[in-house]
Length: 533
Image (cartoon, rainbow, N blue to C red; front, top):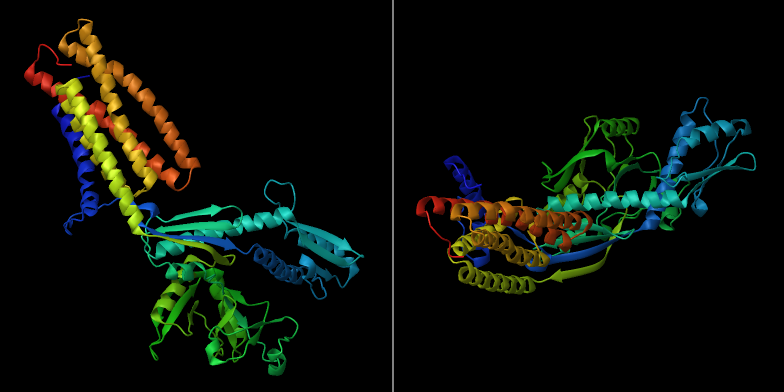
């Protein structure tokens, strides 16, 4: 128990000093001192409650998910029955009253149509229901109605995707440790520490970034478009830049290309006009679709639509076969960069609107840090005085272990890039107080062994050996509690759990391993005949 060869001592000191030195950049930052730029500077990130920042609550439009499912099913039905062998002819498809309804031209093909359309439906998770209810009425009228279980599944999938897209967009802004969690069925909470002006963040998160390429219907009459009347199968889309007075245009509702097959988007400048543009790249399947669209429609205009508004409607002068395209519009450098970020991170499957916004100033965080440091300093000083008065020489080792434990917690938090919140400070103070428990158990056990008549070395060895069992049992229980809080908690609860778990590991290391090494070296050199305990 008291045998520490030189290699082992060197290794223990290396681990201790490496973790402790990693805490220095954070200490310098809190103290307002400059850290040398040539040295590594791992720092503990401060949470929203300490560094200030922005809190935004986003709400999804669940009705939009329902409408999108109807539109997608309408197009899938057309494609599936057109590709059937033999082809199944149907009449116009209606999506009124929340159902996809159409007539099969040949009643003899109704069963074949049912078999084809059944493959477009699937199970709604573990509910035992299908996501679409397929019925045949009046002999040849097919009605496909989304089930509630299917709608709930679609909304849940859309919210999961939206949460991940929001996370990618915020990470692309260069922020650190944002808190992004779902709240309820259709809301997302976004907290970004250190962000003082949330305007750019709101603009980026509020942008769906749904990119579409659709053919312009040149047969539509301008007089009818001015009255909001469009030919069957078309939709009316306004221009994004309404200041130019450009009238809305009619585009084909189906048959275009969506931007979900993009692989990259980068902001750049036009070589001729120096205007800000966004260059996009499709994947293999999307590039093939884009090449086919431009090849079959040379000389015709097609609209580039972003979030339901036309950016531009250029004429296809020649086939575009390289799988790349350029988006131009009324962009400046900042808006082009934001659009590129939004397109790279993916389109939001549903519109999100800001329903709540709060900005937390850094003054509250600075006051919390100041009070937390006072509490930590007073508590640590009181513990150190108590340990010196109670255990004398062994109290010096305990105090040294306590100081190193504090530095190691900060250092490890900085190295793993964790975020410190106000509950984390509470966990920090709690860990420092609990760190002394191990030394108290060890010192008291050594006293008992000396009282039983054991020699000094035997008493110390038995004290560490017997006390270590209770120390490890107690701390394993604390680690289990911290793990449960981390996996089932969120936000500040997770921050508390992280600090608690790190503090438990470092306190056991410093209180048991380091102090035992120091005591072993002292016994070997001083060879005391008694212990002042």
